[in-house]
Amino acid sequence: MYKPGDVILTYVQFADSFEIKKRPAVVLFSEADNFIVAGITSNKLRTGIPVTIKEGAIKDSVIRIDYIYTVSQKIIDKKLFTLTKEKKELLFKELNNKISELLSC
Image 1 (cartoon, helix red, strand yellow):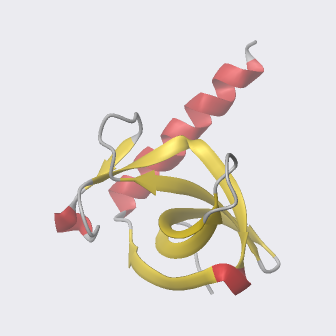
Image 2: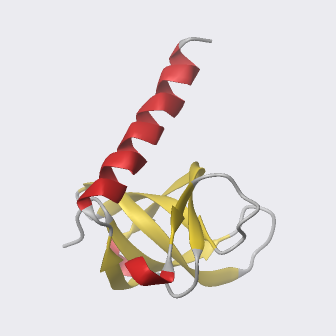
């Protein structure tokens, strides 16, 4: 089973098309056989938390805390690597900040 901080490769259908591609994402939490994930992009112009090749990424990338979605375990291809404790702490701190912003509106 996948745990928070695991970076997985999963199938994603993009909202603006019928195209489905394999994309990396980081597991935030799970419920039954579903996982809430944050998407990862190699587009370094996006804001988020950087993840480097040295940390296990295929290429230098960014965890997008503004791109969160649910995937079924059935469409997950495999686990790629696990974020370090420090990176997980940073990720969840940034998510908490984002949620706090929403609550203050």
